[in-house]
Image 1 (cartoon, helix red, strand yellow):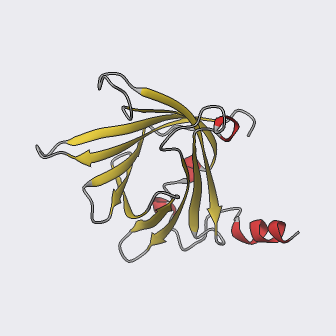
Image 2 (spheres, rainbow, N blue to C red):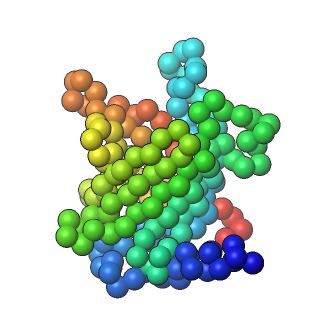
Image 3 (tube, rainbow, N blue to C red):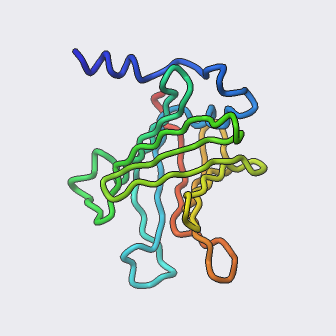
Length: 173
């Protein structure tokens, strides 16, 4: 099948030499994850949080020169039974930028497309949305868990958390 050839050409087994080992920040995230997504979208009381289960799949691609992921919320198995008005089925591609010593990223879903620039800050991976006061932050990364936040810069100069994810590696990997 042609789909098998596409997948075979897209996916990579390991990191390309074009990505120096010290910049191989996404290795711990490669694999399949289940997550709990929390935000206040559509909730009458702002102190309450909406909870949706999702999945996130990370792979090395393009001969190991990039990291691609699929962000799926809600889960594929519950998209029909638990529809969400802002459901996302998105894809991201990250490519190492040797000149800037960071990653360039594009994220696309049916609602929008964004370009991001990614830097490592201490133990966090910070993905800054180009042209906006918004960032997506991976933190508390372990072999089997990570935390992710979507944040915007408030008028007072502090970062406000809009949504967050608590992810766990899928058991059957």
